[in-house]
Length: 140
Image (cartoon, rainbow, N blue to C red; front, side):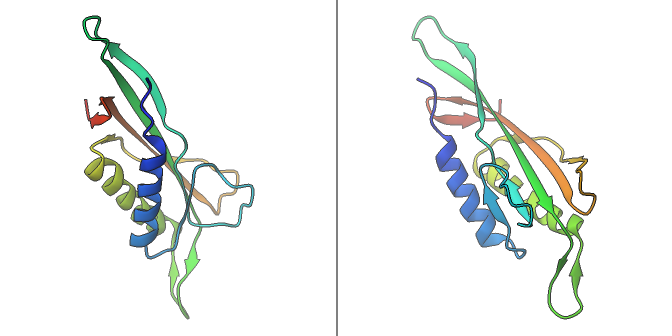
């Protein structure tokens, strides 16, 4: 039976990011149709791939892959304080690494800036991978 871990990881990540960010991000499973919601963290359904299976006991080990996306625009905070989108994305990165690497033990890759049709929007992705066996997550 394939592990069913996505929903609990998503709910934990959503709560953690919203409670610990000073920029009030929204956290969704899919990119919303409205494009005026920023900053935004997208945690889509993870890929779960059968990695190996023992013949003796039928134990299965799966590879799990999360592709997290961030979207941010410059934000005004108070009277004359403007925060750059890069600063916001950097804070969101830190929180996502805390959830996926430190809490869940996944292996995070380097963040990658992605081109976006609207150049006023910073878009970045981070890939996290790990192995799962008997609902226990391992880095390798």
